[in-house]
Each structure stands twice: as C-alpha cells, then as structure tokens.
Length: 406
Image 1 (cartoon, rainbow, N blue to C red):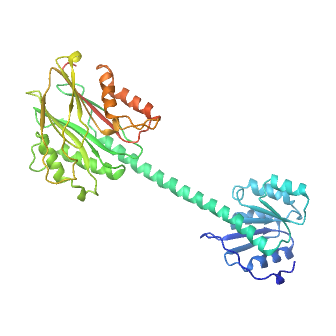
Image 2 (cartoon, rainbow, N blue to C red; image 1 turned 180 degrees about the vertical axis):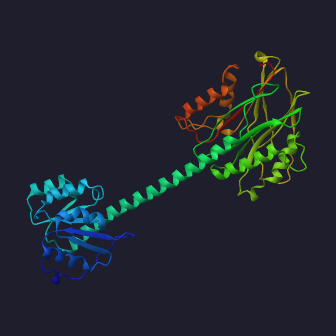
C-alpha cells in the first residue's frame, strides 16, 4: 500500500487526558514505517515500534501502550508465543492486542483469539480502518484504567476516612463512664458506633452527695464533625461549666446548652438530649428533654408490680431555636425502679424486609423481656438479626439505671 496516496483525514480523537499510545512489534522496517505514516496525521496518537520481539515485553513495560499491534511471523520468537507472553505479564495482560499479519487462515485467527488477541487485521489495512480500530480498543482500555484509578482513589479515601472514624470512636469510648455496679444508683450501658460514627455520647455522675445526673445526647448527622460536637457537649456537662445554670434543674441545663450550642456556631449541627437528675433524699427523678426519645421507667413496689411510664418532654432540639424554655418534670421512684435512656439508633432500624422497626415495637420488646434478663445485650442481638448484619446504620447507645433491690 502506498501511504503517500492516502488522503489526509483525521478521525475523532479519544476524549481523555491519557494519550492513545500504539506499540507495534514487527521485524520488518518497511511495515513499521508504513504504520508510522498512517498515524502521523493524528496529533493525539503516540507511536512506538519494536523490531526485536525478544525485547517487546521490556519495552511495553516501559512505554505503557494503550494498544499493541503485533506481527505473527518474526525471527527468534513466534508471534503466537509472544501473545502468550503478553498475557502472562502483569503489566500487559489487559492491554488490547491487535494481530497485524499476512496470514488469513481461519485456524490461525482462531488460535490467536483463543490465546488472548483482541482483534485481527491483514496487513496492511486501510489507514482509516487502522486508526478506527486503534482508537476503539484504546478508548475501552483507557476507560478501564481511569475507572481503576478512580476506584483506587475512592478506596484510599474510604480507608483514610475509616481510620479517622475509628480514631474518633476510640476517643468517644475513652470518655464514656465506667459502669456503676454498687450503691444506691447502679448504671450499665452498651455502645456500638455505626460505620460512619454518629453523634451519640452519654454520661452520669454525682453533682453532690444527694444529686445524681444522667444524660444522653445525639448530634445530627454522622462522621467526625458530629462526634466532635457530641464530645464538646459531653465535656461541658462533665465539667459542670455551664454559666448561670443550676445543674440540678434539668430544664435550666437544657436552656444553658441551647444558648451555648447554637447551630449557627457549630456548622449547622444540632442535637437531641435527655437529661435527668435523681435526688437520693426524696427519691425524686427530675428530667427534661430536647427533641429526644422518651426514657422508659419501670417503677413499682417490686419487680412483678412495676409499671411502665414513658418520661416524655416536648422541648425542641438543642441549638435550633434560641431563647426557648425547657420544662422540668418530676416523678417519684418506688422501692424498685429501672430506667432505660437511649438514642433513636436502638429502634430506628431498617429490617432486611425493607420495613422500619417502629418505636412502639421497640417498647413492646423491652416490656416482653424478663426483668432479670440482660435486656441490652438481647436488644442488640435482636436488631442486628433484623437488619441482617452486625454493623448498624446508626450508633447504638442505651443506658440501664437501677434503683432498689440488687
């Protein structure tokens, strides 16, 4: 074929930042020159050739072609064997390979395809056909490379995020209080952070010899930002540093938190909270809540006669409405009392069927569990089974507080 007689016509280039790179393996210099001239009019196509097939793998590793053109009849190394070498080499095993040969026998073509060739042209083909096939195979390979790069970047980003979330989860765990096994108030808890780490945190401590504070909060959103805000609020409560606030009055505490944690100052994040104070001398439990699920109180003269009361409070979420009052409610504890304080992650569970577990179903489950059973452990196992996996979509946070007979 006389390449000088071919009209100059440029086909549409492959749209990518990665250039089309052709590597020709052929021992005949005249063929190499003819292919070079075919591609010379295409500014986005880079051309390389290798006359020695024994050096083809090494050159391909160095060049990184997006398509390989290869002859079948060459000295020192059979072309079909070279195809096998290309496919066995990790750096070239996915690169599209076009056989460019004088042989037209169907059996030869069939064998070439069976060992890894992607296309077959009888040399020398028409220039437009050559360019079209080079672009077609390069486009698919470049897209595959870019998908792989995007996947690896995403995987690395997710790995780094998972490390950050893991470190944040460890920090949150380090701030959670030790369970209280003895004394007038006994507290135990379970906390399982979600894959993205929600904004749950909780705590309890004696304000003085007569008053015991209990609180659990849940910041909007997921991730490190939500966790950091949760920790900030937790530290304020633990250090008892809310200004002009009687920490024994739950309504005042929530009002103080609402003033200190405006969402405008905390990246538009807000949180819900249930806060209670037990007065040992009178066995009164005062409480208030801001947008939080009601705590569940089982109260009675003994376990068999305990009745359930939902300790609700209708205050707004913390941080979204300035200068709003929060009401303090009070209930008197009987001889035996058990309180569950939790976040919505313990009942807003999407079941494997696609349906959501409702709050009333959660309450029914708690009520149906024997009072001497490990309720929190059984609840966690139950919702993991409903969701179909051990890792939950939201933080699982629940405290069990007991008064009375041990």
